Image (cartoon, rainbow, N blue to C red; front, side, top):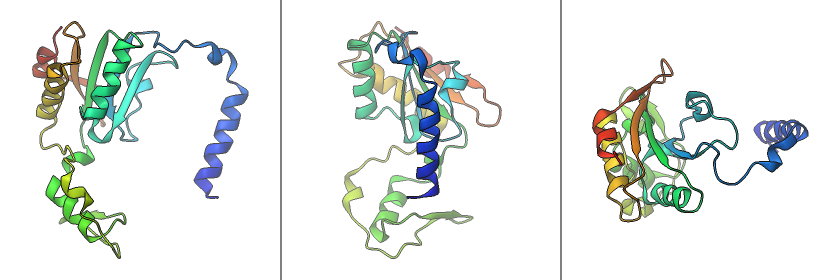
Length: 192
């Protein structure tokens, strides 16, 4: 076992001891909304959106992108669990801005080991073997945060399983200040 593994289990043991009435939380989120955001460890949706356990659905992936799976989760959130509003939240200084589909594909062709980023960009330092399995994947990279948020909100809004009555808001979280900055074009595209 690793140090991290042991720390996680110890933290869970302490958490479970004080779990209290959380076992009685209902499955639908109490505040009836969902957030699609990035997996970046600097973002804590519970803190930046004032959430307690049981308040909202939080869907996270690399970049907070409106992938097919993220849209699937949002549709389930609404259809089966009653969410009435959705937020798409990207953030400043996102790792998804540091590469393109082609860079990712090149890195994966070389090896499956962790790459490094330096002044000249990403560099594979692994020993191989690599794989061409990443060739068919759209890595949903980001070249402009505001544009990316607007595209994601528009993609969600255009999906045939997304009801028109669910408002979708678009924001960028500033990792330097903790502020949510509205992307008006995105929120306009997501209007109910």
